[in-house]
Length: 164
Image (cartoon, rainbow, N blue to C red; front, top):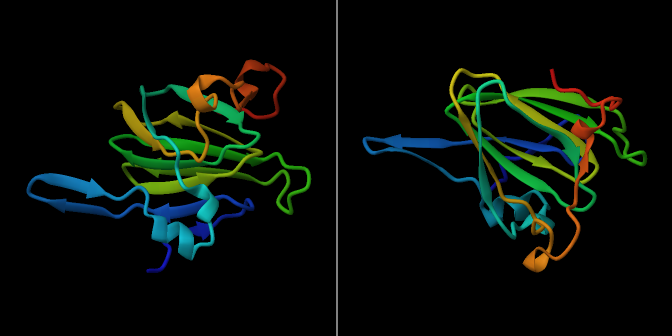
């Protein structure tokens, strides 16, 4: 099976259109398949947890980055999100590259965000939206006994990383 993921203009950030399968009952979308990650040579990204976030219209999450964690997001709707990405890794060949993507109801997608890439999103739709994340690290480590793996840029008023 071929991987649907393609690398974007920031090294290590991968995008795949989400395939929505509909029938009379509603719809179903695969958000993780191990064979996708094997084919794309991303085997270190096996999820170790999963969560769903609910974001109200106009609300912003982030921007922040992780030191070790890779996020594997699914933006499926029912709203749209403006997703912001900045490569903050000084040793990266795409250091300081920036991307803005509209993902969700109008473009259901999966998005892989590696450590050191600042990311955040804003619900730009008129209804609440759901985002699924299946990261490769446990939040606060095993038994929630470790520090949070986040650098929270939204707490710094002088941050160059702004979501508008």
